Image (cartoon, rainbow, N blue to C red; front, top):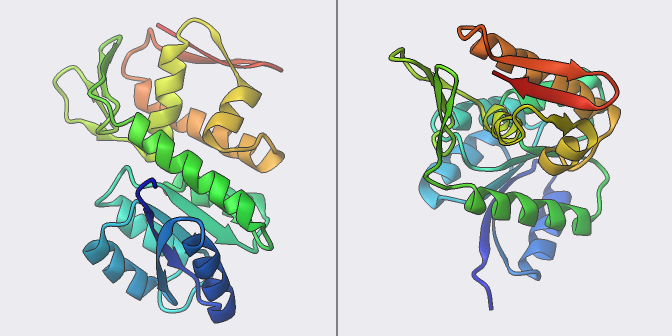
Length: 227
């Protein structure tokens, strides 16, 4: 039997949290359940989970605040948000602070499990030693750092690093918008499309020191990185 995936679940609805915990544990997961963000942060530091599933609205410390604190010290652990919110700004904020995915309540356990497995597998696969040269930049993908010549390294968010990685791998070719949305976000709906536009804008700003590097919007198709 495969090793159990250690998952930290932060959910303040006691009944829902217990249902999720018990359902995951019957599917080969080791689940650490916390009822608020403060306890979740303490358990994160002591239990070393492989993935975090965080409810957005929690007492003492909400999911977004918790994710920000964790991202300040850990740039690679996958984070899934559970949310009853559906506003574009909330979804974009979740991705912007380092979330990898989100599920709107109510959701099916099967969908949560598939997304958890995809993120854990992707994280393991992409922990490589690959360091890429892009114009006058050096991009350390495993560390999620971008450095211009001998300047101080810029720390990228988890999603910025993965988006840049795929743009570089498809350099001078059009990166299909729908394809990359489904690969990195798990869906190509309106909310995630808007979120990706925000990340593209952030990457453009971080790459502007090298005037030869451009991320071109190919209307109706996607984006192309040129140098």
